[in-house]
Length: 341
Image 1 (cartoon, rainbow, N blue to C red):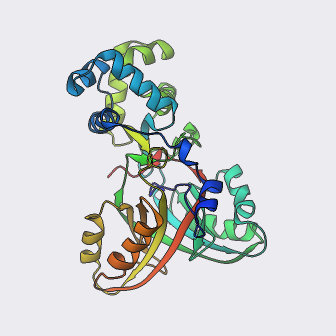
Image 2 (cartoon, helix red, strand yellow):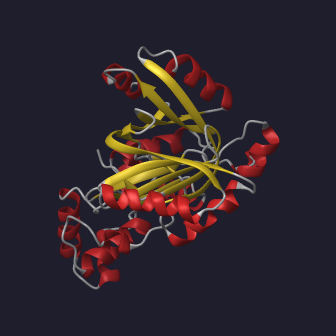
């Protein structure tokens, strides 16, 4: 979502809905062994040069350049700056679940995409029709946002919010591409002091982190050393991290996902440990509200998704209730805002 991470995925009634909401099979980018090796190398060291990548992969510089160009242009890969939302001044986070009346859920919440009140908006089926991720400077502001959201959407039949108390996992390398919804206005409450040059540098990094410091220096009309020192300060402050992120739907790794709201009786430490041990759990947050935690679960197909939820999550000791909101469509996702854990 993500985080938490939101994806455009399959619906309950099969292939026709999959093709309607997501991408046809012909749209999935096929990766070979070299592509996967390059993605792994960049995940570990996002700004590794083409020369170094070529040496590690045992191919020519030209081959690396061609492969990366294809991955970037196809939407399978992005080199970007991920911004820690707490350092950016968003200290309160919650997941809103909406049930709507007549009309399509996407049409009902479309105004939220326009006015920018939400971090994540996903149309779902099951436990609710819409999941909205809200970020706010503090709990009071989060409460106000929630109340305003519900009041401004007359089609809402019921609404609840789970307020995040602890982020346990946020997968930084899987996201939805192309990246959108970014504005340096989101940094107005930053805990890290930023001047105009910092903001311009961050803008470049969000869209073009694969470019060299020299290229950025030319764009900003400053020296290479200035770019290097500014970037080092921003990274050391914890505000941002350069990352190579991939769209797991585009590359065919993920084809089904769900927000899973879990209620645990007593100590949840063992449940958290079990969920963190699974690669199917991309985001995991402890919450207060009508659920103890929220897990964003992804899988290669619907059967794997429902099997994991039924056989693993529901089977954990102390889990009392599990509510599943299967993702049908991603309406909005500020993918650059994450928790850098």
